Image (cartoon, rainbow, N blue to C red; front, top):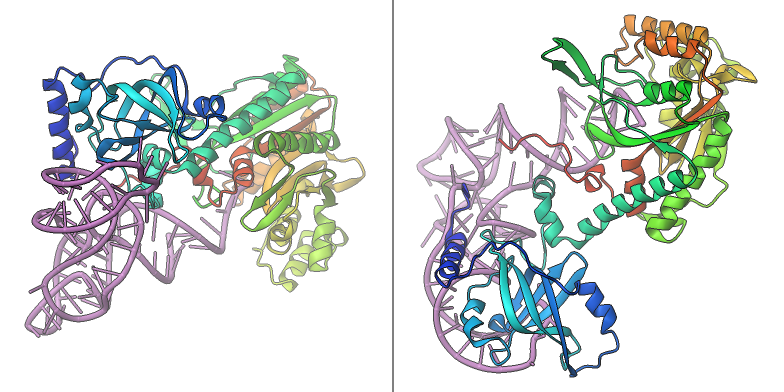
Length: 492
RNA sequence: GCGUCCUUAGCUCAGCGGUAGAGCAGUCCCCUUUUAAGGGAAAGGUCCUGAGUUCAAAUCUCAGAGGACGCACCA
């Protein structure tokens, strides 16, 4: 049962568990009625002075995190905080005294007793009766240094959560972040929907998908790389003028501090608006989330202060490249000329690379890492934006922006392409890219083109990477810190 | 996929060719209003795995496993 862990500590705890059973105590009982959480007690008795005993009876429960003075003092932790439990031999019921010797750090206990504040100022429960609610068999990591081995923290997240307050705070903030976004959108009439995870065509983004198989239908299925095309079908159908989905996407790409094979995105579509409206919405959403989670629009991130207050800088991708690399690629609209310019800048691009990918490559190398404060990078090349409308003033670029923070792409949005024939041609161009070796080019989705042919209103769309937003708002250097169970290789 | 680094007691770490170490946790004893409680004693090991070099390997070399970081890919 405890393969490799059966040692003296476990032996000792198993013996204590047997002793409990022999004393007629079920070490794994069914319930315990609590009157207060730890935090509620600290609030309620904030004014209680040191050395004062009350007759107020309370019931608390939680995990023993420390035992001092041979069991006289227990630190009991619940999800709201810590409360000291005082087990004096004159206050604990006489028949329960032997129980005290059978407790270990890690056990979950319930306590009934009176509230007092010790002469040293620690709010405590003076125990009358004590209940073992779960006997812990395996020892917890050391109390002072905690658990720092990142591999164990990810593989055994429950241990990380038990001993590392920072991890609890970070992962709770992630939930608050998602709730804040949901609240903001729900209150403004955006409809929360769920679209398929299993796709017959992995479209809506440029990425390699995971492949699986349906046995009864005997056909391949892909885990979705984006919900985009299904959400826009809902706009065509008029389910709502405003739809959104907060859910998982799966991409079969590398794993690093900013990428996990499964990640969470917010995707949102709104009829009758364009990408400039999406810029305003991006700022409002992120600001609402930041304010809710951190109580401020400024956050500290790894030694930098990020300021989410409006307005965020807006600059076109080509202008930013011109600003930082000295070449205005709009003046070199031919792919061959563009590649020469990139090469002169020291950016490697393969023969045959299309114009937009050249611009993107130079941007990635020369500009991206400089965009620390929130910046909307607008008007991305049309030929790398197959789902976006062409820019109303420049045929080379699309009405698309990506929002960068801390050098990372945080959001991606367009004026959604609604012309079915244009969409068909864009897909065909992507298929040509695929044929020339780009396995991340977007596949042709005929049904999606069919849907557009029935007419989609002018629509703005937005995607936000929630894991990255969670990282920024919790000062987490790795995406694994904000994902409860990040993807790891099996240990053996 | 490539490169660099890491892996020693349950946890946090030292040791870096010559008998495997500390603190915390656990066991036993003492003390008893502590909060990283304190004092004492005993105990606890596949030094990630496998080969090799050597009189001798936790330590050096090679291969493998897992992980961290960087690069590539990508969000």
